[in-house]
Length: 316
Image (cartoon, rainbow, N blue to C red; front, side, top):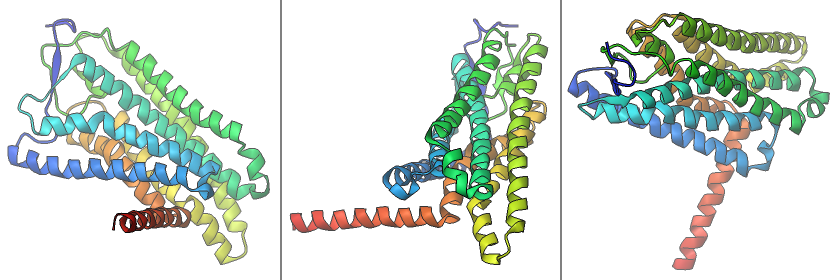
């Protein structure tokens, strides 16, 4: 056995050992990465540029887009590098850092989705008091509170993981480092680590999901009490995008951290869903199903095209 001071790196096997498949995967995930960066950056730009989107819902959506930019940047660059590399190594320190940010970003997303559910509850169930309930101070407190709580939780988990001893076997059957995988590779007694990780994950998952569930319980009750079909449709359309994102994210993230690390393909599938696919889909879901966002995007591109024409005429 070798301890962590002697073991300097791990080997990330990724999704396939076949060289030809790796090339296909590289192209596929490069496209996904570029789409994720473009979509979320565009969402941030539109929210900042359009005064009509300076509301609590879009304030939280901006935080979510920034988080998704960061989330995908934590794992995908290393994944793309390893797909084209023969060594496929990551340092122990790099692996621990990646596990920290994956865990922190995952918890932040859960908290932000819960906060966004509360925002929809306030907007639909208390429309006349919405401005008072969702004040600027409350919105900022909820957003930064989500980030702080999630990163504090990740810090606690990673601090008790840095002193783990790792066996000579250093191969990770995955495309990124996650805490359950590190515990599986360790030669130390990881019972405390697993208990802390499961308890902290379940508490955040339970509290956030309970808040989302209760918010949507009130929302559904309010929507059903609306007499007109048009009113019901309009009320439901304001929260349908968020509901889709919640189902995508919570389903895969909870399953990933509920199953024990064993090198199963299911681990990679669930991780791909919540760490790569969801950040790519979020801006698409919110833009395709939201008239205000689509209008703002058209206005932004319209201004850009007008600017290009003006510059063209000047140079002409």
